[in-house]
Length: 122
Image 1 (cartoon, rainbow, N blue to C red):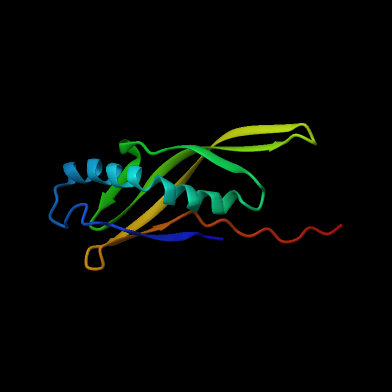
Image 2: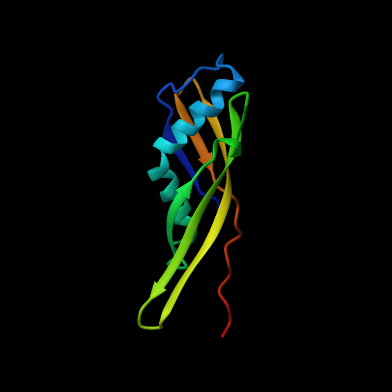
């Protein structure tokens, strides 16, 4: 399984923007897109009924070069089941790659590839 999501770039910057400026601008773009990033992360944890929360992206974890790059997103996952007396919380992180299409004015985010689990035999 690999989740991909397209986001409107809203001309956050152009191809001529200096490398020093792109880090701050991409950080601002990703901060404004946390709802979409949350949906993407949640897709990876839905089958296990885990919740995703406390998402953070540090500017130092954002890498960009010539219209593409990647960033590390840190977040918490949790699982709660009152009937079974389970309350589980853990830190997670994922590397998300991205490609900016300046012509279409969009960014395509692609999460990590995680092989689907096959059904276990009983």
